[in-house]
Image 1 (cartoon, rainbow, N blue to C red):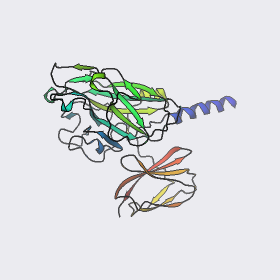
Image 2: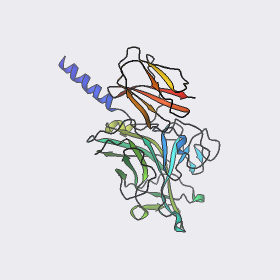
Image 3: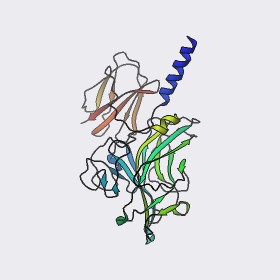
Image 4: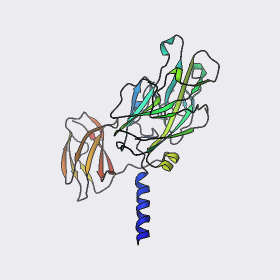
Length: 318
């Protein structure tokens, strides 16, 4: 009996550790088809944290599609979609010297202080000499913050940094690292946080003007090193436990939540950018007032013992 209990605890601990804290980690959930540069915000939960990071989805019929797009040709690492950003620029005149692009998103849950987290990301350099995408660089990295860090600039500091210069423009390369937070960070930003002087570059075509541009896909952050190191996108149905009832949906702003005697600890409402806009403890059936929210789509997360047990999409239409 004791051995069985220990085995159960070990299995349960392993399962609960296997959570990817990155929302929409493979950029498959889209809000609309990209039609222009800098539309990373067309991927659900993702934000633009500097200049014009791009989003590629097969639903686009022009240069922002996948696998063909303005930066080259590349199949997704998994699924169909991915992101793209500039990690290095040297352009004469010097107006674009040290230009960088960054993407970011809110984490599924805040990080626990002192806990070791493991991070992985797949990257592939884009090569398109006609538009000076002709180089590869090191220093693809990550910074964590409390709340959206806003417009980012390089300050030669990253919480996780990869010194590897990835020059493969055919195959995806997985980068892995780790981080122990000193605060309850809930936002992640990805890009090159080092200036040109502190960034190594390989110029693939010996051009005077140089830019390094990377496709980004399959991002994972977890307390489980094996899970993070092997994570890849597999399509999952929306989590929705049928004993929970939310109505009316669409709503004018007031929604009823019927728990049907199931024990729920709290409920949180996220906007399409992945930011918590309302959170409350919940033990019984309640009416949730969301009348102050703008019209649009929102996601209601139900937690029990800090574990997500259901996600419901709602529409507010005043």
